Image (cartoon, rainbow, N blue to C red; front, side, top):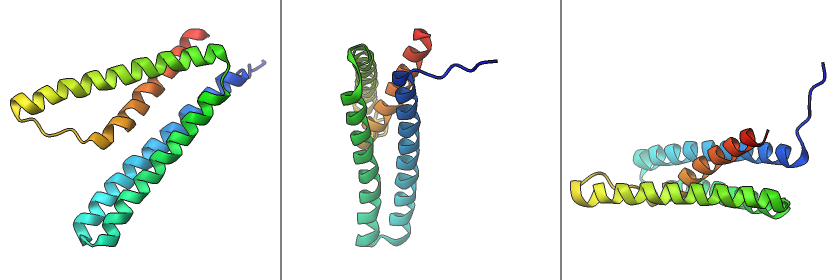
Length: 135
C-alpha cells in the first residue's frame, strides 16, 4: 500500500494551517491568562505582560501569513485571495451585524482585538475547504 505524499503547496498550506491553529490557541490562552492575572493583581507590570504576550503572538501570525503568501505560486495566490476575500468579508459582515445589535438592543460590545483571530479561523476553514475540493 503506497501512501501519497502531499504536493509542495498542499504540504505548505497544511503546515500553515497547523501553525495558525497553534498561534490562535496560544493567543486565546494568553488572553485568558492575562485577564485573570490583571484581575488578580491589577499591577502595571501584569497589565503590560497581559498586552505584550498576545501582541507578540499576533505579530508572529502576521509574519507567518506574509511568508506563506510570498512563497506561493500563481494558482495558490488565487486560492489565497479567495480565502482572504471570503474570510474578511464574512468577519466584517458578522461584525457589522453585531454592531447593529450593540447599537439597537444594547448587546455587549464586540472587542475589536478579536477581529483578527476571527478572520484567522474563518480563513483557515476556507483554505481547508478549498484544499479538500481540489483533490
